[in-house]
Image 1 (cartoon, rainbow, N blue to C red):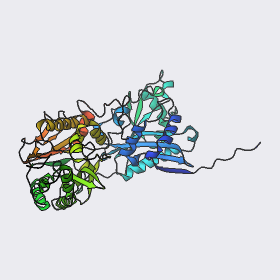
Image 2 (cartoon, one colour):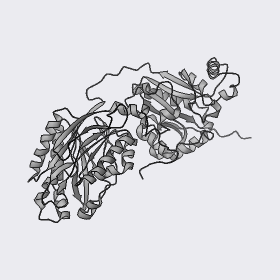
Image 3 (tube, one colour):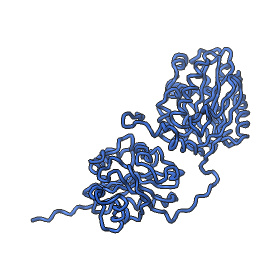
Image 4 (cartoon, helix red, strand yellow):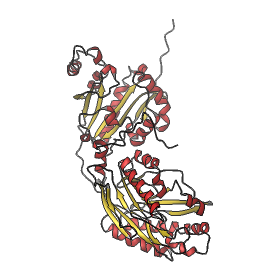
Length: 509
């Protein structure tokens, strides 16, 4: 009789990527056939987008055989009483907090055929190393006790755990975790109700990082309180780019004098130069105006650096390769810049100028956290703000241009709804006054504002600041990002956490 051929292994530990979902789903179906099977794809994409370093897989000759998922939390916000669904946001990890102090184990699983190779230990060691490298205080996990159902008639959960600790009983999960240096902080009730083998109970396990060093606030560190400035400026005919930039510099200088972190300008902020093209038809005039946009952007970028403030350059027309777009520029004070193209263009922009819509929604990293920009009409589509928030945006800037009050109200009330339903801050600003002879841009209406979520920690009307209608002025207000974390975890309502993702989903195609 021939001996079976020895299998040659080649193990590789690496981080998961977006392309890994199908293979990981196959692995999870093997492991969790009695617990609902694999994560949904939208959950998986949210996990690797929010914390790619924490999602780890082991392959054997290119085949996935084990994986571990994790996130970072500020543990004081959850404490020792929580459920799996609450802390992981139903698997979407929206509670992931890069500034938190605790690595939280979301999941760990090994293919049944590979459970003799101690791959679970290897994954735990990798997460402990991650905990040390990120200087996190501890590693916390909720652990199943799948052997408990067999002993439930004779032992309480606490007594069962003691028996496992004393090695009187072997539990396939708890015994393994104890051998990996974890200790039990508490017994959790109803942690994972679907876990019939554990009768819904779980152990709250902790591994303490002895290398942890108390964090010291450094210059340039992540901000909690961010100061926003918005400019509601009056449209007036100007004769040159230099004159426009000088007008903008007045407001940038004023707002930066209050140590603001951002200044927001209106949509089509270069419109005062439209008077130079009164002899042209509107489609030709807007394309000629677009010829100034690069010089305006570069001039504002210089001011962002010299005045130490991040500038949201409202929007400027862009014409290239016979295509016209409406583009907002994020001009960072470190000298870098990025663009957000208006995605939904209004019927008027299409019929009068031939503007085309962009094809990508961006969430921008800044020295004050993640932000998004929705240009005017884009704020009236709730999907965009939700997608941005799901990617971590905490502040949404809405530069707009409206000609009448009813047009303005559409932008205003939709923007305020976006702040409430996404539990984020939204700043809006537009232009006021008149531009005689500038066809399609002759009249303006605006009342700039900064909106907050609606809960006890925020103003009673969810408005942090509000301008006088149709008056040239600035608004300055502080937004506390820490309050967003609180409202998302302990608010009277929790719109993000309570979404019925078992019934519907939202994803970018």
